[in-house]
Image 1 (tube, rainbow, N blue to C red):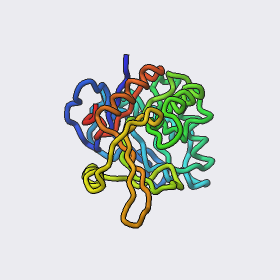
Image 2 (cartoon, rainbow, N blue to C red):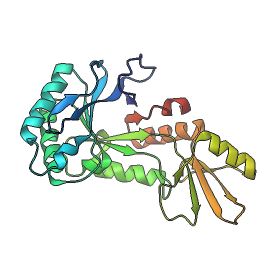
Image 3 (cartoon, one colour):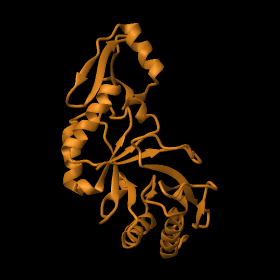
Length: 251
């Protein structure tokens, strides 16, 4: 059975569309003193995973009590009846690692699932790594197989987010420049581009030469590629999915 989580805006209490069972709402953050606090007044505890962001207070080496913060985190999740906790860190520093390791153990003992971004998952024993599924180079299937080899199928949640990006050729990076759907349509029409499907990347693409003879590579998803990504992920053993707010429009 799939575990499907939809990322929602803060305070969004609208009924979840099928087949979504849970929502991820970044409802909590840390105060400057390193204490847990609510960012929004109301949650739907039965299906709202407690997202905690802005954990910059832990970057202060002298500040923050990791053990107390973990105790407060578990107590808040239990009081809300939340089906899980998502800890979102942007940077790496020693206290962050201490907090993640302790929270990983404490939430596991309380039988509350912990979700973390892939960059934070190394070294943790129980946390579910939320991993970006899209690739702009290499192989989509190999990427998923590597994740499963590292964490196992029960500790990987695939982040499904439609990609729409442009790359100059030759490309010096893997992220490219984000494009809107309007910009995508304009480029296709302007350069009368022929669209192809990349089995390796599991996405559609086209190339064109601009007026300065600069080559460009455009990589994007549509309904068919998002459905194919979902199919391949399931076939490879992934059962947990985190969907960006716009992803359901493509599925």
